[in-house]
Image (tube, rainbow over all chains, first blue to last red; front, side):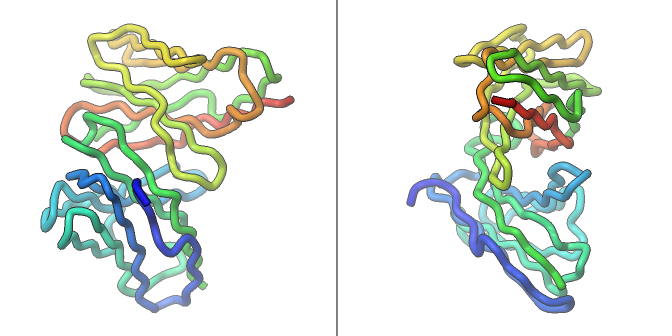
Length: 114
Length: 110
């Protein structure tokens, strides 16, 4: 399917477990982003990537790890999940430079940490 | 990156009425984008206005930009129930990721 997809769409896990959220885009966009959305906070940037093997921290990176070995994939790992990481996670991508063009968002992953 | 601040936080109107929401930002920009988010879904890009533009239209959407006041407005004319969503502005100063605020929650009542 063309576009940007996220998996899983829903995930329930327990405190201390490792969780990986997947993001895949078919456009070969250079930039990819991870945001989390919580009530009262809007969307907050976790990490972003300008290209394969280039990643950078956003506003709230603590507790998260990212990698980007291929242009089309940008997985987000919670190494030891905490309840405060219960949130909806959105992946996005854009062609060209960050902040210049349209960002395309995935459908989101709703993560619950018990 | 800079964050825009949307106002009002929530807006409730009748179907057929116009909806206006505002965005303020703090430093000079290259462009400003507006996005819509339907409940439980990802954001969808609506319109981008560049710093040298004052007004832009797309269907029932009209966006204005006043760089001297560091503000933008989004007008949705003849609102429909399907316009019920949250709306976010994202000012951009250049090659930095977009930052989103808390948005304006629009409810259009049929």
